[in-house]
Length: 304
Image (spheres, rainbow, N blue to C red):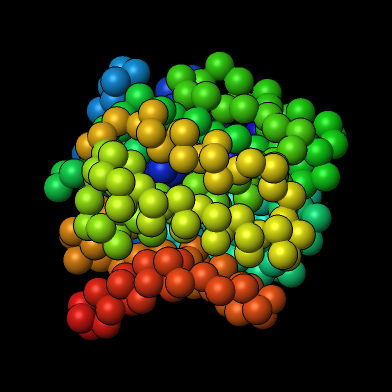
């Protein structure tokens, strides 16, 4: 299987590099600046699971080539419209589209463009790029979950499983990928919401009583909206996710908080903002979610 990775940042660089490491045919779709950097340094991964350096196959959006068997989208959610245009020349009627973006809002535009070729996907990993463009994995989790949206075990998903198998990362085929995606959406919306609102790693937010109570209310608001729009979430999700946050390393930060600390754009419109819109449509009061969203939007307004 010939795989195109759209993006070679922390996520695309890591999982694409692990596939390269095992000998899988992988090409990265990158911008000119990143292409020049990778041509100079190679793709470098520094990880608790072992370091890797390889010479990646690179293309930019203006370079013609044959369609790929699968395209993995690893860019930030606010680049969605741009990346859809960029990958279209590299897809045909049989190209699998595997998005690893946060949230759910990206699924409708992708399906509108690529139809049933879009499958479900998500990842759990904490990575960043250093000043040299090396992929630095900062915690041991390196999970990528994927599957057909209807849970079927199709021939094409089996081919993708074969391509992923044996790589030095946890590539997992799921029969309930849409529920997995909604559960992750709930988790990261709460995690990014509470850590940015408190400007704190996760530890104090689950140990200081007032902060923990605020987080509990946020988790309940998120679940209330998701239930109102018939999202396939499990009963007791807020409690399960609170328990998960309490098990995390106290110094863990959300990627949104790290982006704010670097003065970068955030995905708050795609995460908190989208849920606020859905809650308003259903008449659901979500004051904590609104406060978290407002906090980040004020930050963004001060950056411009």
